[in-house]
Image (cartoon, rainbow, N blue to C red; front, side, top):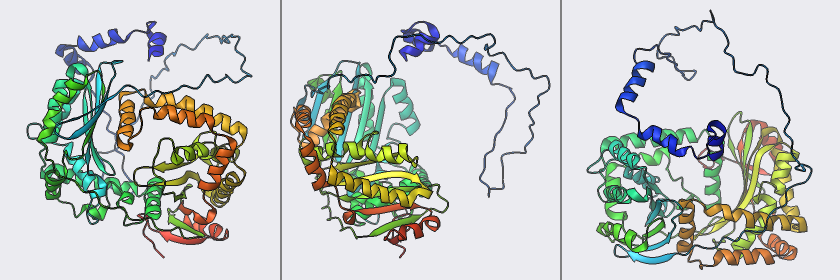
Length: 543
């Protein structure tokens, strides 16, 4: 932005002048612009319809006239190209700087509003405050016949309150330059708040209104339910969504709530009523086990006092269900979802590791091991499939983990005609890396890239809040980033190769899902020795 200001105005610090244009604006200025450019002016109506839709907004009654048209002068005439001169040697890659160690910021821990555990950090770089409030719940608590309930509840929490319509609430936030948003996670309900420090009190008054005085009405419920249903229908036409949805079920099992789509399905939404939303708020929206993260230009005692209104929430214990064990992978099978005419095939290949998140142990070290295989743009998988073959825009693999478990997965959208070859090559590249391991050059690159990239992850307020939230969620030590850096520095080729042999799966242990044109690809996949198990777009077996 500074560069753009300098380029177009000659003043890199043009921001105060631009702001003054808004603050000095008067009602008369707006009316003058309306009367000059909008009122009574001719209009062009564009109606865009699907092929099978016969009605339209109006007749096609406008033909562009070229009579008297004269192309404007864009100022290019007489321009002369002046080649830039510099002494920079473009034949040499710039050398990377020394690794940047991200130190955990000073933070405080406390409780407020009775028993909400809080973690926070004073950051006065900008006059703003970021707050994350996490309440136990989320999709993990959805009944099996009402999948999507938690998501629908979060959606309704962003609607009317007792004293504001949703439009009035949004306008009040915009006037303050603030934001408040409620969303459902896997096992929590998150309320995310951002405010300028000077407007914090007014923003928190709106937050109090949002969480303590929601107003659930039938009209908003019906509208959101219909919109969610239409979004689900649309998503099921998108191969990437279909692949991720079915893959999660294949890895974790259909009876595992962590594999369920957060929004639910078209059928499950029909079982959710407005009374379910009311019951969720009364029975499952509780401060018991809740947590808070506060980062910004505000002190500990001040912010905890301002958030004390949360004590008015019930203290009901929210019991989370037990998570069932994942199913075993079936050997030599490819699960296939047919998308007729698909130009590319969505790949999801992996296995359940049962390796939970940790900051410095096996999970972290396994992520280091995978970095040159599929964790970076320069990885073997991406360079081969994208750069060498031109089959994909991007391919990646990696470990994911949380408090419940984890998996290792490869994903990519690959040119349809290359599906069988790509599947063979992906499995071969993985096995080669498992057997032969990392090269010294790859290890050097991994150490530099991971240590340098770490510093970019915690710049914004919400990034810092997420950083502290991870410490809070997983009970991490204050110096965990330093310990990560120490682990990274001391890892050797031998260490990485031992992890690769231990953690990378054999081909027999993999769940393989392809989403693409079955007619064009089934015979080719079968010829590779795989049995094809066909699924519908919601991941149910058709065999």
